[in-house]
Image (cartoon, rainbow, N blue to C red; front, side, top):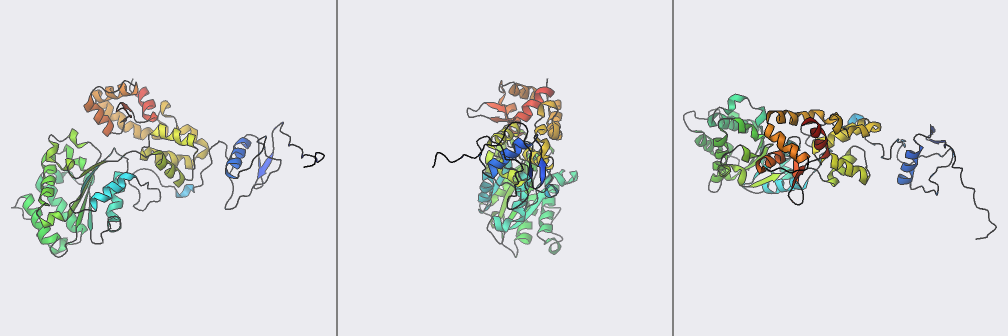
Amino acid sequence: MSENKKKPPKPESSGPLSFSVNGRKIDGQVQAGVIHHLTQHFHISSESGAAPDNFECRPAGGEFNPVSSPEPAPRANPGKLIRPGGPLDVNSRIYIKRDTDEDVIDELSRPRGLVTVQAPRQSGKTSLMLRIHVNAKEILEDEGIRPVFLDFQALPGRCFESLETIWRTVAQEIGAQLEIAHEYPGFWNGDDPYDRNMNGFLDRCVFKTDKSPVLLCFDEVDRMFTTPVKTEFFSSIRAFYGRSAFDPAWRAVRWLLNTSSEPAFFIDDINQSPFNIGEYIRLRPFTAGEVLRLARCHGFDPSPELLDRIQTYLGGRPYLTHLLFYRMAKAPDQWERFFDGATGGGIFLKHLKRYLKQFQKDSGLAEAFKQVIRQKGCKKERLAERLEAAGLVKRDTEQNVICACDLYAQYFARMLK
């Protein structure tokens, strides 16, 4: 290169710059965020980090939106966001599949399959169950399987008066959902015990002409834990499962049970229940990679720093993470204020108050959690297990009991003084 060739003059960098994006003038208050976004997403480099005056940016594929923070604005349509709360639609685009989903599916694909899924409320248990129930033929790769869904929380109290009433209710639901009830109006004999009625119902009704397996999906079975027949009911499930070793009808029945509570806290003898046979699966929180996938469903592509901050703050709890991204997508310029657990709970207050009410009823549990927040562990293992089942604590690599996330630590440190 000739030494006499003139170098292009450097752009002036003193004073505020003025440039436009798609014809809109951008002032100095957001220019740093815009330059960051441009250099990250359009690979523009500059020794000074400045953009030339009157720079026009028209990226292919859409309009560029200037941002006022280092994090990119969401690209999702706020009008198409899915409101958090309750089970997701069975084909929802924001359902995040976890490794444990495959464990559940693998067991239910086998004859005599039995799975118990335990996780705190708002962790995705029902969403998983409904996806399997509605798409059972495809998911379990069995064109003949006949799924039945029963929500125990939705049943009237009179159904839980005795084993007779609960199993008759189950049989009625099976008959209605398989559309065979009208064919066998007198299937239940009030003079016979419930187990004989169930055996006869399967033989003479469910499998009389169709030998295809039946998948029983029992959601929120922890409703039974507060009933007088809790021990007998779960013993009866185990007994029916035991018959599948020699009874062709019960062998064709597969079981999927969901519970938010840890059964061992409510059943005197776990060996007289279905919870220590088959597969017992605890749904874990989202990993960082799963949180990233959920963020992208909402139009975000957070930096590693922000992703780590979200994971630390919410601990991968599915509902809380969904709620955060939903609110961030609705108000992307206010996302910082959603990390306000220490000042009152903010958008997570309703969720936090549910735990607070439980602590107000159980001073021993509250004191145990206070010790965890103060990083003193939990001396009583039974209380630690209850806190862990509720999703409030977790175990570190050395099995020490620590708070599940910063949100809980910040909020309850203030509320449990």
